[in-house]
Length: 299
Image 1 (tube, one colour):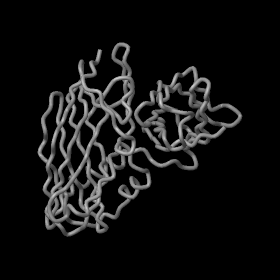
Image 2 (tube, helix red, strand yellow):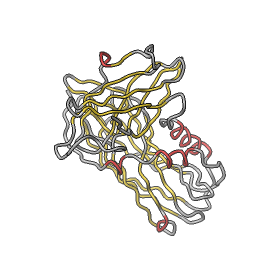
Image 3 (cartoon, rainbow, N blue to C red):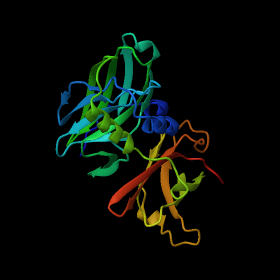
Image 4 (tube, rainbow, N blue to C red):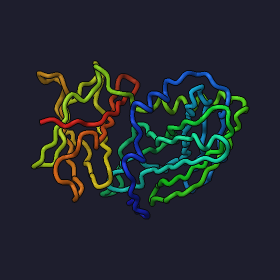
């Protein structure tokens, strides 16, 4: 059984950035020759963490990631860790000539997996993983990034990890193509935006049963793997029950899913539009795909 040693309360805005910003980072032009670098590893029980940046773009976009090394048998957590766990929290500040223009818009996480330890369930990662960071600053100025990281690395118990990472970025430093490629790969692993063939067509909230009902359009040949929901502190979501998932052979050709939810005690009604974000994972042949989208509830 996992022992949760440190409760953690995070605001939703600090943990999840907007999809528009994410895709701006992901498709930024490949130009730029400065700032590709990495910090030293901070060693922890069960793994290690470090900060890595790619080449800064001409518009000041600075692709970066928090890299987490996990030893076999160890895990770390997603944005919404489930009934037990510590969600990751990263704050970034700067010093030096480029610090005044530094903007940090939060971190993004790739689709997680679901785990169980005894009577506890949680979501996260059991292999090395990288969390992309959304950064921007003026070009042509030296900058030192200072990252404060809090997360859990877990096996039979969960070890809270508090680490401070420093990364000096010289404006005239040569690009490191390997670091730039690895940061781009981390952004490419994020859930995509909804598309015409992969989207939440309808979302509704049942005020009596406190269930969230989703109708999802899947790509041709895709099989639904899981639906993960993330929301501000106080919400609790139960795993998708296969008994509450209809096949797509219905008349509308959609997958229908119902997810039991517990709302915050201070909630005066149903969840507000956009307060809950859904990450939906599917299997297509030998590959997995995922989208992330805010839920807009309709009658």
